[in-house]
Image (cartoon, rainbow, N blue to C red; front, top):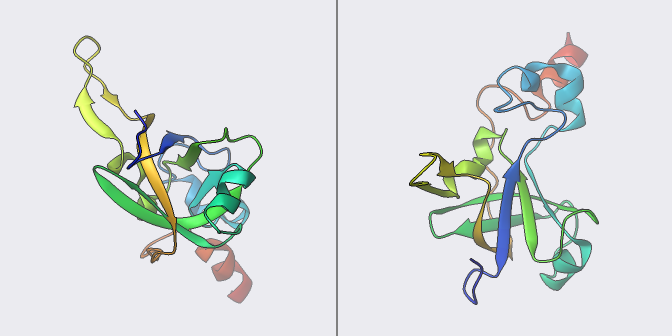
Length: 141
């Protein structure tokens, strides 16, 4: 639940271009060119309230960890929420969520948790695939 220390709700989910963890789709040059980097989507008014602009690096932090990624202004993201797709291992959204299991379903609560967002941070760079590397390899071949 959001509070004064963690006022945003972090929502995680899929991204159209990269299915699940992106193990296959991030190797596809066309899909990787469309969405090469991890992004966090915020409502434009929330982004402006942070003093950040689309494309700038922001850090999303929860009680369990933090990741730095690029900001995206999205009118479809509700005010007070930040959306991170879980397909980017260099910005692993599920490391931020609550791993405690539901007592009945025995599944973790990976879809949302309280978070805070601030400007700046250091984006992790890729070591194997994604990040536009597939398209770059085709262009130099």
